Length: 362
Ligand SMILES: *Cc1c(COP(=O)(O)O)cnc(C)c1O
Ligand code: SF4
Image (cartoon, rainbow, N blue to C red; front, top):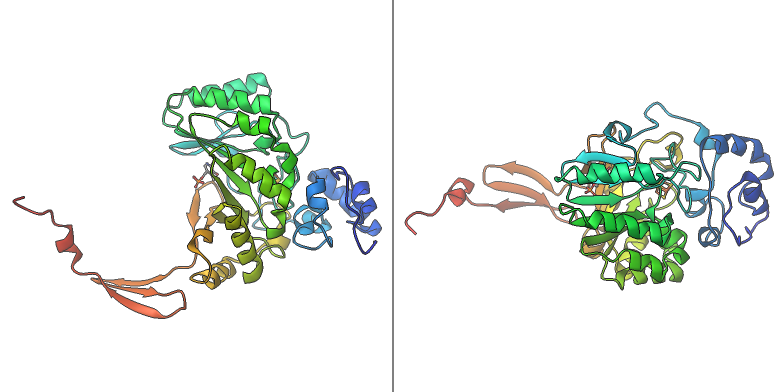
């Protein structure tokens, strides 16, 4: 393998591409062909250029590895139970007020730790016109759905025209007031965020873009410009990151990521505990370690940078916060709390029964 991988001018997709680019050793060819039979690979130039070594925080996320063929006991093909919650193709409905709409399963790159890795891919499919219409009809028929979350795959891989048609259809539903777009495109293929694309996002609904970013180095000048083009349309950009071994699992790398997001005016929203998708154990960080990482940042890093650390409970039971706890005890009117430096304090609350009584005679 050459010492320095060569930058690619086009998206790397095949084992041959990886070997030629110096991102995989010749000797791994047959094992990687086996991985390729299960999972798609795509490494766009924006990411390939950032890889200094195949096992660095960027390379690890996108370069296939023979370890993906090893499936551990707790891993499952549908880790968060999306399949059981899909009333029609393209829709996932778990919470009363919001639903996912997945217009396609194509991504600009294929994350090796993806929780939908059994489904996403270049041939994973795009909802055809009739299927998209049925998914939209399901949303039209469910007035309790106030928020539609476009995900996939990556919705920013749609053409601006098709994106616009979906947004127009959603905003025409009187009950839909909020639209969210989950995407990796701003960092993975920033050139796709054209003026035409951001114009397509213009809507009377409350529009939010959630960018998936896992390492500070992903926020290149081009990625920041792409984010700026979205923000320039008065669309807030927030971030979701996955806690990943060898990518962002030290206090330094996590702090650099969160600070880089805030400096790009992107509020870190969720830090996800890795979902147990097949062949992802090389990325796993124990929850106890995740809590320690976040606790190390508390008080030292601006609160704007502090994400909610969440676990999507396997089996489709929903996401819950699992961050470090600062509340230690609650006894009658005394609450024990821990401060950011780890010291315990007793806080006297007063008699809550009296506080809760309505005032009389006024
Ligand atoms: C994650 C998820 C959402 C969004 O959850 P928030 O906590 O609102 O970000 C909605 N529906 C499904 C099925 C999800 O998996
Ligand atoms: S961009 Fe999202 S959906 Fe696509 S491979 Fe990565 S994690 Fe999976």
